[in-house]
Image 1 (tube, rainbow, N blue to C red):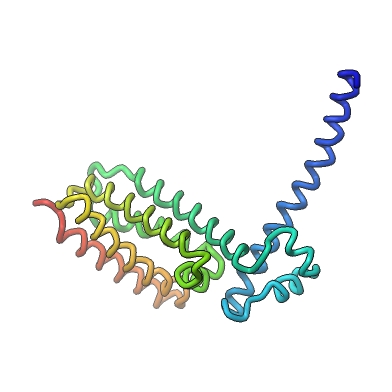
Image 2: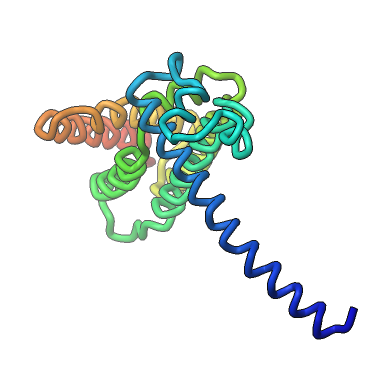
Length: 214
């Protein structure tokens, strides 16, 4: 085939492929959005691919072109959560600590994590699914490892005392406390949510303050 015809054919195929890829991305996002909404409405036990397909107005067979089962969809939601938390932790790691008080750091750091909890749809049932479903457990472990490792490095810059293992232990307490309270913060009404957030920040300041090397 002459080179000009080859290039023309390649251009035509690419032109056809791009709209198809765009439609596939849009459909994938629709599936994730619908699943997140249903997860919040009906819970993990009653969430099925039949229900997801019905809400989308497509057949279950069509849904399986994108995801082979319910757990695969939840895994994709979990990956998005992990990506968002990774970005948040990178932002926290980049906070300039010079002339910043411990209270100031905690305020910025927790607010940054709170943004992820606020933007993630169905955050509570998703968090429960990541912890309880074996197929998703690896994502939960990756999340915890990411947060704890980065927190330990930040704590060292904050002059907290202790070995790497000790700083990671404090990091796990920080993570478990903030995770539990932030799940409540995003589900509470405004005034109650504000008080819970303030209490969380005060708790974390005390926790870290107890480990600062005088």
